[in-house]
Image (cartoon, rainbow over all chains, first blue to last red; front, top):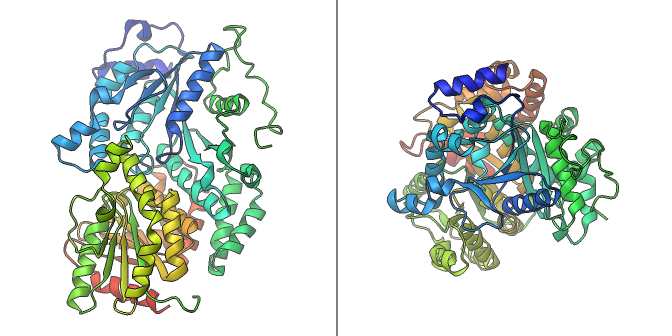
Length: 304
Length: 252
């Protein structure tokens, strides 16, 4: 009933909802993945591959681009923020540098959420999934208000959202860098307050995949010891404080993604689905759907 | 500190808009007036104009606009690529600084607007590693104090700072900028006072109090090893303190 009320309240704010959606007989709502991460971590590649993977499974999935500086896509773009505003225009007209222009674009998007975004998101039904390909500026996810208000708004509209945080596996070569990545991901998690799935991308690019192994399901005592070795001794207590927070709240777990391996993609997708409860009642749809009931066997996952 | 390292290098990092460049301008002017001009290296290829005189400027070596067209990159990719290109020649920069170390007491490095270009890229790591191998290197983490009044953003910033500490394994000095607009004293108090921190965060975040408690534990430990200084790049208040902190760190 709550969902219905929140639908109503958006109507009051002037959003025109399609009749189909407003009078949908069930209130199970669509799902969305917000794909974030530093520049060059492989967000668009992830979107492309997930899209392909889902297409081959017969699962519908749309990709919306939110990066005003993107230039080409390998996936079909359902909606594009550049229809609303383009970075080059802003840079020219407002005489801003690239970064300032991006912030301007995001603020513009924030202001136009009720018109543009609501319009783009119209017509999605239960069990539809939308992926947002986002810009690579980290501060958008840890400081800026645009994405926070977007997620709040969409959650209010009844969307179930998960944040997919992508980090380049090549930067996780030792414990200190791993912790740096975790803290980075954590600040996005605290800011956006969404279910969070962390992904290490480009695992296929690593020469020695075994270096990642200790960090996928980290042993915290070991991690703290490794930090002790690598850091100035005065940080010993800090090392242990961080490791214990990670342990107590299970804040860190990274899923490795090897883009060349369908199974690893499926595992990552499964993690995202679990985080938002996608496919809980999808078993009746088609026989071609994957079985989401069983957890994939992690032991033979791509790290061999 | 290992023997044989000479010269103090300060790498200025911070979120876009925190005021890295204006902070540097203020510090540079002050140092010049006191007869110890700093040696400044600009690593931001997209800077429109610099208010200070950079001794080495990435823009002299790499033209960011032509990188954009040559490699068919967007603005973000072009900044990253320019930084990578420059990093391949950074050994030259280090040897120049080495030569200059007898004449200059302070070396400053200005970094690109977006913090992750420096902290989350291969080139950033290369540059900090090279610097720390030759010089006594310190990170100056610039914070936007008015923005930090929002406890959640403050938290994010602090986590970023801890992240930078682990990523670079260098000493970090927190520089609260723009203190003419909002004071940094309450924020520093938050770091050391758990119950205050908790009550501040409670109103704005969805996270359980046990989580904020544990996060605070991290910050408290971090705070123990931290030098904190407040400055206003706009009015110039606090610059003396910054310099004395820099001297402290430099002395070792």
